[in-house]
Image (cartoon, rainbow, N blue to C red; front, side, top):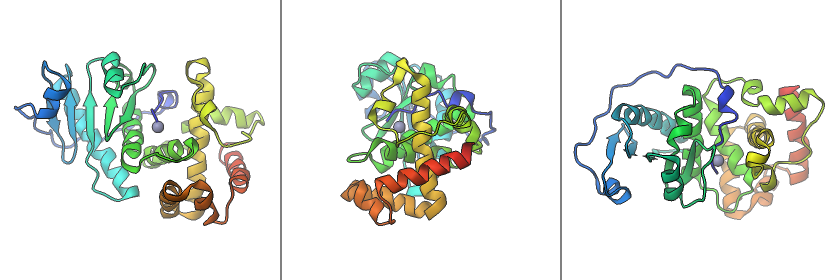
Length: 268
Ligand SMILES: [Zn+2]
Protein backbone atom coordinates (compact mmCIF):
# COMPACT_ATOMS: atom_id res chain seq x y z
CA UNK A 1 0.00 0.00 0.00
CA UNK A 2 2.75 2.37 0.89
CA UNK A 3 4.92 3.72 -1.86
CA UNK A 4 8.55 3.00 -1.24
CA UNK A 5 11.33 5.32 -2.29
CA UNK A 6 13.82 2.99 -3.92
CA UNK A 7 12.56 3.71 -7.39
CA UNK A 8 12.07 7.42 -7.13
CA UNK A 9 15.50 7.91 -5.60
CA UNK A 10 16.96 7.48 -9.04
CA UNK A 11 14.23 9.37 -10.82
CA UNK A 12 15.39 12.19 -13.05
CA UNK A 13 14.52 15.72 -12.17
CA UNK A 14 11.49 17.16 -13.85
CA UNK A 15 10.15 20.68 -13.89
CA UNK A 16 6.72 21.03 -12.41
CA UNK A 17 4.90 24.09 -13.68
CA UNK A 18 3.99 26.44 -10.87
CA UNK A 19 0.40 27.48 -10.49
CA UNK A 20 -1.01 30.38 -8.54
CA UNK A 21 -0.41 30.25 -4.79
CA UNK A 22 -3.31 28.87 -2.82
CA UNK A 23 -4.69 30.77 0.15
CA UNK A 24 -4.13 29.52 3.65
CA UNK A 25 -7.18 29.18 5.80
CA UNK A 26 -6.90 31.60 8.73
CA UNK A 27 -9.30 29.45 10.74
CA UNK A 28 -8.46 25.90 11.69
CA UNK A 29 -11.13 23.53 10.42
CA UNK A 30 -12.38 20.95 12.82
CA UNK A 31 -10.20 18.34 11.19
CA UNK A 32 -6.98 20.09 12.10
CA UNK A 33 -8.20 20.50 15.68
CA UNK A 34 -9.23 16.89 15.79
CA UNK A 35 -5.85 15.70 14.55
CA UNK A 36 -3.72 17.96 16.71
CA UNK A 37 -5.03 19.67 19.82
CA UNK A 38 -2.17 22.16 19.63
CA UNK A 39 -3.31 23.22 16.19
CA UNK A 40 -2.36 22.85 12.57
CA UNK A 41 -2.37 24.75 9.31
CA UNK A 42 -4.82 24.12 6.49
CA UNK A 43 -4.02 25.02 2.90
CA UNK A 44 -6.61 24.63 0.17
CA UNK A 45 -5.71 23.91 -3.42
CA UNK A 46 -8.13 24.02 -6.35
CA UNK A 47 -9.60 20.67 -5.29
CA UNK A 48 -7.22 19.49 -2.58
CA UNK A 49 -6.99 20.17 1.13
CA UNK A 50 -3.64 19.88 2.90
CA UNK A 51 -3.53 19.76 6.68
CA UNK A 52 -0.11 20.24 8.23
CA UNK A 53 1.36 20.03 11.69
CA UNK A 54 4.50 22.12 12.24
CA UNK A 55 5.01 22.38 8.47
CA UNK A 56 5.97 25.62 6.74
CA UNK A 57 3.06 27.19 4.82
CA UNK A 58 5.22 27.27 1.68
CA UNK A 59 5.70 23.51 1.87
CA UNK A 60 1.97 23.00 2.28
CA UNK A 61 1.22 25.25 -0.70
CA UNK A 62 3.66 23.21 -2.78
CA UNK A 63 1.93 20.04 -1.64
CA UNK A 64 -1.50 21.47 -2.50
CA UNK A 65 -0.33 22.21 -6.06
CA UNK A 66 1.10 18.72 -6.37
CA UNK A 67 -2.03 17.15 -4.85
CA UNK A 68 -4.21 19.02 -7.36
CA UNK A 69 -2.03 17.70 -10.20
CA UNK A 70 -2.09 14.17 -8.77
CA UNK A 71 -5.87 14.40 -8.44
CA UNK A 72 -6.14 15.38 -12.12
CA UNK A 73 -3.94 12.44 -13.12
CA UNK A 74 -6.01 9.99 -11.12
CA UNK A 75 -9.25 11.48 -12.47
CA UNK A 76 -8.01 11.12 -16.06
CA UNK A 77 -7.73 7.38 -15.52
CA UNK A 78 -10.54 6.66 -13.08
CA UNK A 79 -12.98 9.49 -13.72
CA UNK A 80 -13.49 12.32 -11.36
CA UNK A 81 -13.39 14.76 -9.87
CA UNK A 82 -10.89 13.57 -7.26
CA UNK A 83 -10.59 15.71 -4.14
CA UNK A 84 -7.31 14.86 -2.39
CA UNK A 85 -6.97 15.17 1.37
CA UNK A 86 -3.31 15.24 2.33
CA UNK A 87 -2.19 15.10 5.96
CA UNK A 88 1.34 16.25 6.82
CA UNK A 89 2.33 15.27 10.37
CA UNK A 90 5.38 16.77 12.02
CA UNK A 91 7.36 13.54 12.19
CA UNK A 92 7.44 9.94 10.97
CA UNK A 93 6.35 8.81 14.45
CA UNK A 94 3.29 11.01 14.20
CA UNK A 95 2.58 9.62 10.72
CA UNK A 96 2.73 6.05 12.06
CA UNK A 97 0.36 6.91 14.92
CA UNK A 98 -2.14 8.52 12.53
CA UNK A 99 -2.00 5.54 10.17
CA UNK A 100 -2.23 3.17 13.18
CA UNK A 101 0.83 1.20 12.11
CA UNK A 102 3.91 0.33 14.10
CA UNK A 103 6.37 1.95 11.76
CA UNK A 104 6.58 3.90 8.53
CA UNK A 105 10.33 3.41 8.19
CA UNK A 106 11.52 4.30 4.72
CA UNK A 107 8.05 5.21 3.45
CA UNK A 108 7.37 8.52 1.74
CA UNK A 109 3.58 8.41 2.19
CA UNK A 110 0.78 6.00 3.07
CA UNK A 111 -2.85 5.76 1.98
CA UNK A 112 -5.14 5.62 4.97
CA UNK A 113 -8.92 5.77 5.15
CA UNK A 114 -9.63 8.25 2.40
CA UNK A 115 -6.54 10.37 2.91
CA UNK A 116 -2.85 10.38 2.08
CA UNK A 117 -0.50 10.74 5.04
CA UNK A 118 2.90 12.14 4.11
CA UNK A 119 5.98 11.02 6.03
CA UNK A 120 7.73 14.37 6.16
CA UNK A 121 11.38 13.37 6.54
CA UNK A 122 11.34 10.88 3.65
CA UNK A 123 9.01 12.82 1.36
CA UNK A 124 11.22 15.91 1.64
CA UNK A 125 14.18 13.97 0.26
CA UNK A 126 12.41 13.00 -2.99
CA UNK A 127 12.96 14.98 -6.14
CA UNK A 128 10.07 16.68 -7.87
CA UNK A 129 9.15 13.73 -10.08
CA UNK A 130 9.36 11.37 -7.10
CA UNK A 131 6.97 13.48 -5.05
CA UNK A 132 4.43 13.55 -7.88
CA UNK A 133 4.69 9.79 -8.47
CA UNK A 134 4.23 9.05 -4.76
CA UNK A 135 1.20 11.32 -4.41
CA UNK A 136 -0.52 9.92 -7.51
CA UNK A 137 0.26 6.36 -6.36
CA UNK A 138 -1.26 6.82 -2.90
CA UNK A 139 -4.19 8.81 -4.25
CA UNK A 140 -4.93 5.95 -6.64
CA UNK A 141 -5.20 3.59 -3.65
CA UNK A 142 -7.52 6.03 -1.88
CA UNK A 143 -9.69 6.53 -4.97
CA UNK A 144 -9.81 3.04 -6.48
CA UNK A 145 -9.72 0.94 -3.29
CA UNK A 146 -7.74 -2.25 -2.83
CA UNK A 147 -10.08 -4.69 -1.05
CA UNK A 148 -10.19 -8.20 -2.43
CA UNK A 149 -7.41 -7.69 -4.97
CA UNK A 150 -4.06 -9.45 -5.35
CA UNK A 151 -1.22 -7.18 -4.33
CA UNK A 152 0.38 -7.17 -7.80
CA UNK A 153 -2.82 -5.67 -9.19
CA UNK A 154 -3.38 -2.86 -6.71
CA UNK A 155 0.27 -1.88 -6.36
CA UNK A 156 0.87 -2.23 -10.08
CA UNK A 157 -2.23 -0.18 -10.88
CA UNK A 158 -1.16 2.57 -8.45
CA UNK A 159 2.25 2.71 -10.11
CA UNK A 160 0.62 2.65 -13.54
CA UNK A 161 -1.23 5.86 -12.64
CA UNK A 162 1.78 7.25 -10.77
CA UNK A 163 4.19 6.85 -13.68
CA UNK A 164 1.69 7.41 -16.50
CA UNK A 165 2.54 11.08 -17.06
CA UNK A 166 5.91 11.17 -15.33
CA UNK A 167 7.96 11.14 -18.53
CA UNK A 168 10.32 8.58 -17.00
CA UNK A 169 11.63 5.95 -19.43
CA UNK A 170 10.72 2.41 -18.39
CA UNK A 171 14.38 1.40 -18.06
CA UNK A 172 14.89 4.20 -15.52
CA UNK A 173 11.68 3.68 -13.58
CA UNK A 174 12.31 -0.09 -13.47
CA UNK A 175 16.10 0.08 -13.12
CA UNK A 176 16.45 -2.66 -10.49
CA UNK A 177 14.37 -5.10 -12.52
CA UNK A 178 16.26 -4.15 -15.68
CA UNK A 179 19.51 -5.25 -14.05
CA UNK A 180 18.03 -8.71 -13.47
CA UNK A 181 16.58 -8.97 -16.97
CA UNK A 182 19.86 -8.00 -18.61
CA UNK A 183 21.51 -10.75 -16.56
CA UNK A 184 19.04 -13.20 -18.07
CA UNK A 185 16.85 -13.53 -14.99
CA UNK A 186 13.18 -13.02 -15.85
CA UNK A 187 10.82 -13.24 -12.87
CA UNK A 188 8.86 -16.48 -12.87
CA UNK A 189 5.63 -15.31 -11.30
CA UNK A 190 3.72 -12.16 -10.50
CA UNK A 191 4.94 -10.69 -7.19
CA UNK A 192 2.96 -11.76 -4.13
CA UNK A 193 2.84 -10.59 -0.51
CA UNK A 194 6.24 -12.13 0.33
CA UNK A 195 7.99 -10.04 -2.32
CA UNK A 196 6.36 -6.86 -1.03
CA UNK A 197 7.19 -7.77 2.57
CA UNK A 198 10.92 -7.88 1.80
CA UNK A 199 11.26 -4.41 3.33
CA UNK A 200 14.55 -3.67 5.08
CA UNK A 201 15.87 -7.20 4.57
CA UNK A 202 16.10 -6.84 0.81
CA UNK A 203 15.28 -3.38 -0.53
CA UNK A 204 16.23 -4.35 -4.08
CA UNK A 205 13.72 -7.21 -4.04
CA UNK A 206 11.08 -4.80 -2.81
CA UNK A 207 11.88 -2.31 -5.56
CA UNK A 208 11.64 -5.09 -8.15
CA UNK A 209 8.30 -6.24 -6.72
CA UNK A 210 6.80 -2.83 -7.45
CA UNK A 211 8.39 -2.76 -10.89
CA UNK A 212 7.14 -6.24 -11.77
CA UNK A 213 3.62 -5.30 -10.66
CA UNK A 214 3.78 -2.02 -12.57
CA UNK A 215 4.80 -3.77 -15.78
CA UNK A 216 1.95 -6.27 -15.43
CA UNK A 217 -0.56 -3.42 -15.42
CA UNK A 218 1.37 -1.51 -18.08
CA UNK A 219 1.28 -4.63 -20.27
CA UNK A 220 -2.50 -4.85 -19.93
CA UNK A 221 -2.88 -1.14 -20.77
CA UNK A 222 -0.49 -1.40 -23.76
CA UNK A 223 -2.08 -4.54 -25.14
CA UNK A 224 -5.77 -3.98 -24.40
CA UNK A 225 -6.02 -0.24 -23.70
CA UNK A 226 -6.15 1.82 -20.55
CA UNK A 227 -9.94 1.64 -20.34
CA UNK A 228 -9.72 -2.15 -20.32
CA UNK A 229 -7.17 -2.03 -17.49
CA UNK A 230 -9.56 0.12 -15.44
CA UNK A 231 -12.49 -2.20 -16.19
CA UNK A 232 -10.36 -5.20 -15.22
CA UNK A 233 -9.50 -3.53 -11.93
CA UNK A 234 -13.14 -2.80 -11.12
CA UNK A 235 -14.30 -6.21 -12.25
CA UNK A 236 -11.61 -7.86 -10.12
CA UNK A 237 -12.76 -5.89 -7.07
CA UNK A 238 -16.35 -6.95 -7.70
CA UNK A 239 -15.95 -10.57 -8.77
CA UNK A 240 -12.37 -11.61 -8.25
CA UNK A 241 -9.32 -11.38 -10.46
CA UNK A 242 -9.77 -14.75 -12.18
CA UNK A 243 -13.18 -13.81 -13.55
CA UNK A 244 -11.89 -10.38 -14.56
CA UNK A 245 -8.96 -11.90 -16.46
CA UNK A 246 -11.23 -14.45 -18.12
CA UNK A 247 -13.20 -11.60 -19.69
CA UNK A 248 -9.98 -10.73 -21.57
CA UNK A 249 -9.37 -14.32 -22.55
CA UNK A 250 -6.60 -14.60 -19.97
CA UNK A 251 -5.89 -16.82 -17.00
CA UNK A 252 -3.32 -16.21 -14.28
CA UNK A 253 -0.99 -18.57 -16.17
CA UNK A 254 -1.40 -16.96 -19.61
CA UNK A 255 -1.12 -13.46 -18.15
CA UNK A 256 2.09 -14.49 -16.40
CA UNK A 257 3.55 -15.91 -19.60
CA UNK A 258 2.71 -12.81 -21.62
CA UNK A 259 3.92 -10.48 -18.85
CA UNK A 260 7.27 -12.29 -18.78
CA UNK A 261 7.65 -11.71 -22.55
CA UNK A 262 6.71 -8.05 -22.05
CA UNK A 263 9.23 -7.59 -19.23
CA UNK A 264 11.93 -9.08 -21.46
CA UNK A 265 10.94 -6.87 -24.41
CA UNK A 266 10.79 -3.70 -22.34
CA UNK A 267 13.98 -4.15 -20.33
CA UNK A 268 16.40 -6.46 -22.14
ZN1 LIG B 1 0.97 1.29 -2.80
